[in-house]
Image (cartoon, rainbow, N blue to C red):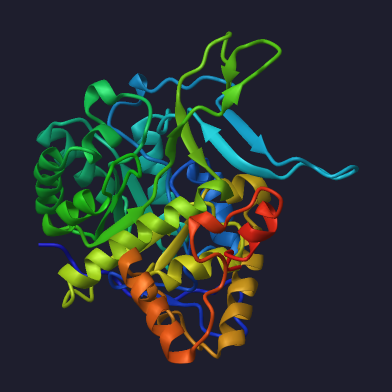
Length: 396
């Protein structure tokens, strides 16, 4: 039987102003900002830095039992940049990686997780794990990782590249039959809360999320990166990132993916609200292009309890959590919110069907005797005024 999460108290980045603390699966975080599994949680040194800067929690880079099978290449990142105005630096809006899970010895990572828990007993440390389709392997990795004292487990069912032939990562997360069986093994063995990390590379993300929750997982994390090809170098005709003239599709992140991530989180939150209404102990962690406190507010408004950041740390550093907290508190003060729960999920009820939008607009026009904004029909478009006509139907 799983033990209930231990309530922990710690100093927080952004302690003045509205209360940013959140309680997730019994674990109390000083703020909702969590280091996502990846390079920012790759070893003891960087995770220690994250704790010292005030991040709400840290999820270590994904580990497996046999790191000898994990071989990374360099370069393994590629950026998508916006066009820069004269004299300004181009803004990074997209980031692709072809990086695998941790290539460090499993025993080394275990020792560092244990050391972190000994030095920071009141901080929330979450291990990310991934294994093959083998019950004994899952039971072994859970037992050995839990022995370090970590507070929870995040299961990587979502890495979009590397080792699909071993049914690892997204290859497992895209197969609900397989996912149900493996989640059953995991939750029968685990004694700490379990989060299932979802892949967006699937038609309907609510299917695996529902499967994981029904199989006993306490939380869902979404989304992992989106399968992508960053681009082709038009001078060399080779794809990026380029390794000895070749490349492979990788995971896409950064601010360009945020609208997609928001849609996936919204779908999962609606499903959880409708199908697990009495399960207040379940949680949702939003991931995807968070670089500001306002970005985080959007995920929370759609039902997220916590918000994870990975690429944002790689672009702005660990100290960026202070800005995130300050900006989120400014948003809360603007609306009179005193806690995260005051507005979590507040925007979910404003999503509906297109047919309902048509009905609502018709009723509003009839009631208020107002002319519909924009063109009434496709026949009214003109070539000469096309841009202005388009603008009449934009909402923001």
